[in-house]
Length: 358
Image (cartoon, rainbow, N blue to C red):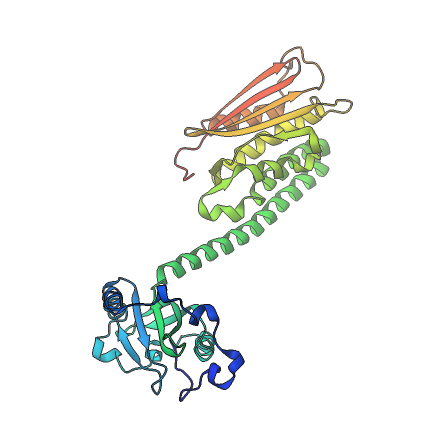
């Protein structure tokens, strides 16, 4: 807590309209302590693990008049070093003055406040204190004490800072990866023009862009090690602009960040094939159902086409995209099964994700 304005100046004394809220002052008889209950309450406050202190606003400089064992343990001070002092003795060089001003304002207005302050122990070590303070009134509505509970939230603050740092790093990595994919794409385009293979270069670039989309939507989540598969899948397929011709059936499965390159490339190849020859080809009015589920140590994606050109079996020749896809799946110790049904392609990709934290 902080120092109260000098004297007995209370907002309620200066302005009758500024009396504290009735729900704070007009305590029902059933909520008041009898003598026996008061003793039990005092014993409970003395024994609780929550650091608690009371200050007297009716004495000069609002001194602490009670500090329990947990408060002494938290701050490192003995009782005779605490009683009679204003709570400001816990403040130090890096305590936020704006936060202190908010505490003073709450005390002046006899209000309740929860705030985090940087305080200091007797040995000089800082700690983040989640302070909860509020007024205590007697049966007549007169202010008797200010109650303050303290909670060391240094570990919580550190975790927040670490998470913020991880997200900042993820954003920086996202920026760098976008630049990297852009540079690679530019090199491919130049080489395609120089060597007269523009169509081949465009095909390669389509795969580069697919990988970029897979990573771009997931980098913000990469700091926690796993990502939600649903948003990433939808982002990968978004450029195909098929609208309602794709139905997403997957659940909230999460996968390791490292699995996205394989998933992104496979989905790109399946979508490109559907656009050229399958359910999404010109003149076709087909549909694709895409499902993804966690199954033990694997994530399984199921691609099912219908309503496109009727198929008589697998293609006579395996294309470059299928070859690349098969090699990447094998390198990742996964499997992909294709079944060319008459109504359309049915493919099942299984990606092992042992060791993830989902």
